Length: 273
Image (tube, rainbow, N blue to C red):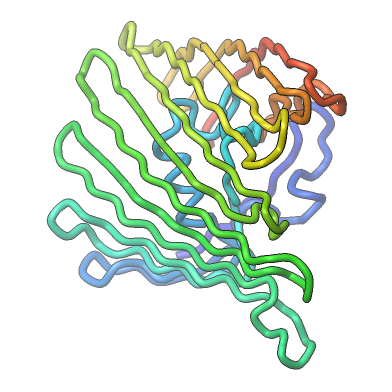
């Protein structure tokens, strides 16, 4: 198996992910129903996959994680990922991403390790995930992530919840955070779904370092591969926070002033090739 993904900003045509040719996923691997899947290359981290799975907006437009209010490291280079087969409702994912420092004694600089365990049985599912990002230089500290999440599908609606603790985010010492995200998907017809999400974060020991976001949207399937959507979001930034409604489809309103709230209405069409 293999996959090569190129990110292109739809509004400008420029390459996404910092201009990388294959800036999304680029990997090859082997898969077995009995033994699981082993892949090598640039890949999603298990921590990000867990956030994406328990996000009512799937880390896309309107997502509390896409804006950065809830933290996630999406992809890692030089990554070896193992995904287990399902055993009694449980699945395991583990990743080791190796840095490229050539300096003696610094081989672990920039390494990233992540793992997750997910359980699904009928309408209920839950997951735990952890990640450690090694510092990339002699200064700074290793960043550590730990999260728990769950979801329940009642048929008439599906509820999501996630809580995460982050230490030294970005390998910056004492940049510690507590984050939470809740969401709901409500099917209103065979083609349409109403989605809503509320999330927030707080940086420990930083006055004005908190932020919250609320998103409400309607997603309508025109066919199996084509969807249109309308999503409204509001981010409330405290005096030291500058979050905006960034997502994979494009950057949100420019926000460089701490304490400035952001409101956005986002309309789009998504086609799956």
